[in-house]
Image 1 (cartoon, rainbow, N blue to C red):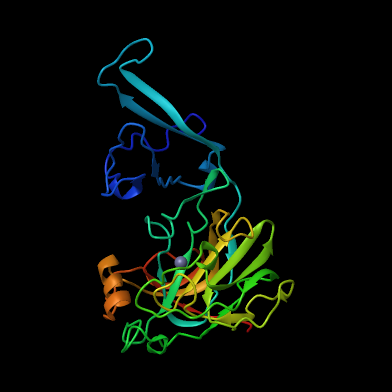
Image 2: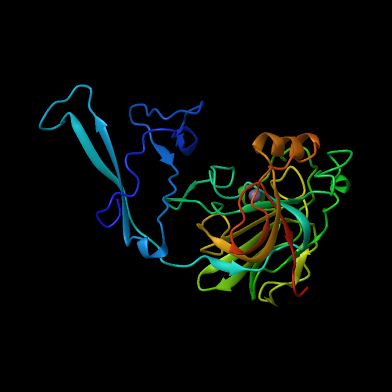
Length: 320
Ligand SMILES: [Zn+2]
């Protein structure tokens, strides 16, 4: 419901991928007594002129054993009432350069990123909801060749990572060890999950987070100013990671955990392919299989767009 007009109603089917019930061991949409759940809902409107001021989310239910007037047979409850942000997505330059960069865990299904909602300081936060995990495919469509547990099997390991816009560095971690690919490391503290990283203040309450960088690869200190396209470190495999990749996101605060992710657009890129499905992606990342690409994907030059999960792109970086 937006400004009194129903946006999507009712939503009763195909909810399974979009609902996570707290404490459930199997995917379900059934709430037990006293149980809570999160639901991810994407609402689209025909044009920017149709964006509402406020949105309200109501849930209706039928009571099996009503006891009116205290407990009527039909109940409708407002579970969310929120102002809609009119802020545009931030336009940035790409954080990498070259061909065949694959967007893993990106928008907009409930990926590991979008599903990461944490209770911190008394509220739920979703820092990674628009985050991308970047890996680079070879011309054969592979992510690694040879021993999966050696960082040297990943040809893009150590490639330069670039500032997506101008801004001051507000935090750096540069001394965590590289992890062995092939499995997620154990024994890390929550603060170490991002590995070696840079947080950059892009202004206007927006911060960029570049994570899992190579040990010792950031040649800057807190307070240094970066220009767009400047190399800030090297793609690595530090922190909570099972293969070399760049985790990148924009957030509304300087703390990569206690913040909310913000949408962004990449100024210019070439969409060259799309991985055919999540099964093939798992084959590429876990067993070294070759990527299979979707036929009929709308490839070509793109401007001011957010890449989507499974996109394969070529990036140019002007400076650097
Ligand atoms: Zn990530």
